[in-house]
Amino acid sequence: MVTPQDIKGYIEKGLNCQFVEVAGDGHHFEAIIVSPEFAGKTKIAQHQLVYQALGDRMRAEIHALSMKTLTPEQWLAGRK
Amino acid sequence: MSAREVIDNQVKSNKVVLYMKGSPDFPQCGFSANAVKILRASGVNDFLAVDVLQDPEIRQGIKEYANWPTIPQLYINGEFIGGSDIMTEMYQSGELKDIL
Image 1 (cartoon, rainbow over the protein chains, first blue to last red):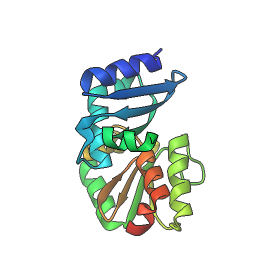
Image 2: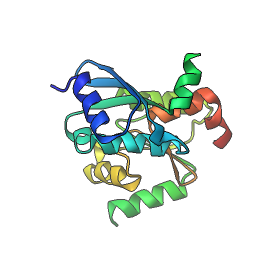
Image 3: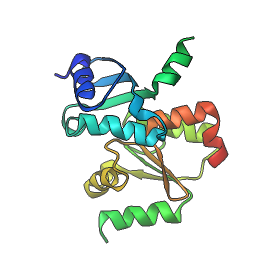
């Protein structure tokens, strides 16, 4: 079974990330992803980058992934 | 008609189209249920709901159409808007109401 740690690893391998947090029960996962690559991109394009990093795993192993994508600037602003 | 042509025709001849698992009254997945709830909360009761579980070709075709591997998918005026997460964010920020 896929663990949140596996998914975190897949995302970090395929995408330059500043921060990734994944929680889940093996079927449904929730992720927060902070990457400088998201700057200037639409939400659709940001999510597509994450899907791209996950590749075929998104079709085969991962049933459901809910995600929130942020640029480093948005991430900092949200923590203040 | 290929799946791509069927999808192209659906999204271009209907203002709001939701590709989902199950029907609006009996969604078969939590994310699809969430998408329907958001549309209704935004005052949209008249939309085309396409149940991808009824058609394997559409189910595969829709993933390729917008280069988006998951379902649900929302289209407004022929344009791909996003999946469940993006719909939720746009609903909360009020952006979704603006484009509906």
